[in-house]
Amino acid sequence: GGEAAEDTKMMCGDARESPTSPLPASVSAPGSTSVAALIADADGGALGERLAAMGLDASRSSSFAAAAARLLAAGVAPETRATAFWVPGRIEVLGKHTDYAGGRSLLCAVNRGFSVVAADRDDAVLRVFASFELTGEADVAEVALAAAPEAASPAGWAVYPAVTARRLARNFGIRGGVDLALSCDLPEASGMSSSSAVVIATFLCLSARNRLSAQLRARLPTAEALCHYLGCVENGQDCGHELPGDAGVGTFGGSEDHTAILLCRRAELRVYAFCPTALEATLPSPP
Image (cartoon, rainbow, N blue to C red; front, side):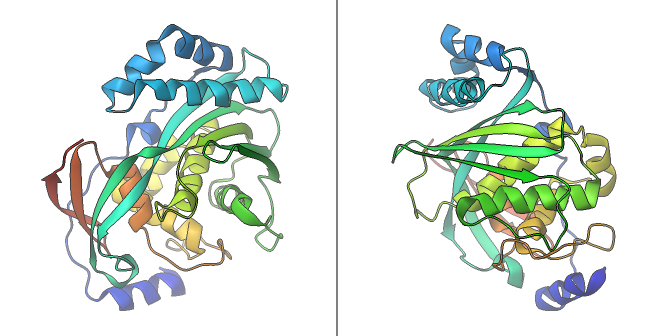
C-alpha cells in the first residue's frame, strides 16, 4: 500500500510466492539480565561459553563487558534491567545493489560487528554510547523517541539510531527509552554495512525495552517482512499503509543488508531474492 510501496512493486515486477521463516528469537522472545549480571557472566566465563556455542570467539565477551562498564560509568545502576545482542557485519559475495530491483544476492554474515548492551530508562530518551575498537574513538548521542518526522537528525553515525527511534515512535508508539552501549570492531569504510547494523541494533534494543513482540508478530509476522520493514526504516519509504515512513537517513536502498545481518547463519552462504524477499539456496562455507 501507499505510493512508495506501489513504486517498489513496479520496480520489482510481478509478485511471486516465496517461502518465509518465523521472526528471530531476538525479536520474538528476547531475554534479559542486569548490567551487573552481564559483567559477572563475562568475568566468570559463562558469556564466553554462550558466544562460542554461537560460533563466535569467546574472547568477544570482553567487548560486552566493556559496553556494560561504559553504562555503569555513565551512571546506570548495576541492577538495571538490560538486554544484550550480537549484531554482525555482512559481506555481499555477489549481487550488489540488486535488492531494490528484485534481483538476487549471495550473502553471508561475518565474525565482526557490534557487541550491544542496552539498559532500561524511565523516560522517552535514547542515549547511545559508541566505542570503535580499531581506532579507540568513542562518542555519545542522545535523541527523543517521540521526535516529529520533520525534526532535524544528528550528523554522522548518530543519524542511524535517531532515524530508527523516530520511526518506531511513529509506527509503534514506543515511549520506553534505553541507554545503549555498542562496541564495534568493523574496519572503517569496509563495506560490511555498519550503518544497517546500527539500525538493527537500535531496533532490537528498543523493541525489547518496549515489549513489541506481540505487535511485531501481528504486523510483521515473518522474518522476511521484518527485514523489509527495517530497510524501509533506513530508506524512509512506507511499509504499507499502517507503517508510514519519513525522510529516512537520506540514502535509498533495499533490505539486503538487514536480511544478511538478521538471517544469515554460521558456516553458510545464502542466496536471497528480493521483492519479495525469499531464501533460494543455502551453501556450505568454512566457518
